[in-house]
Image 1 (spheres, rainbow, N blue to C red):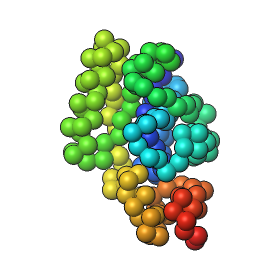
Image 2 (image 1 turned 135 degrees about the vertical axis):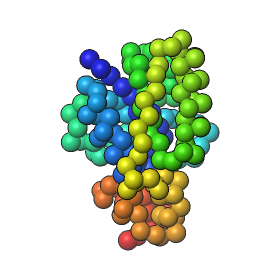
Image 3 (image 1 turned 90 degrees about the vertical axis):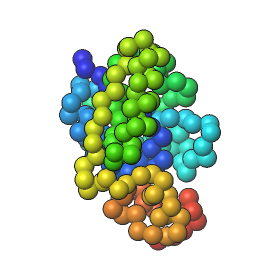
Length: 162
C-alpha cells in the first residue's frame, strides 16, 4: 500500500489545500492529513476543531485519514510508517523554504522520508491561510477561498455576523 501524508497547520483549510488533497488522494492508496499542533502560534481554530473541519471537507474521499501531531514530522512519519510527505507550492517563493524543510526531513529521517511537491492549481495560487484570516478579520468576502460550510465559523472567530 502506497501511503503519504500532507502535514500543515490548515488554519483554516483553504480551497487550495483541498485541491492538493484531492490530487494527492488520487496518487496514493492512503493519504493522511496531519494537523500540526504548533505551540508557537495562536491559531484561529484549535487542533481538534481543525481535524473536525478537515474531516468534513474531505468526507467524499474514502482513502483520506485526518490526524494531528506535535513534535517532529519525521517522528510521526516513522510511527505511522509513512515515507512520503506531500507539500503544495503556490509560487517560486515557496520552493526555497519547502526545499530546505524537505532536505532536512530526509537527512533527519536517515533517508526514510521523501517529499513530493505538487504545484497548486492556478485558480488557487493566490490563496494562503494567512490571507484568508486577514480578509475575514476585516469582513471581506472569503467565499472563493474556503469551503462554504466553514465561512460563518471563520467570521465568528472575529465576532463578525454575515
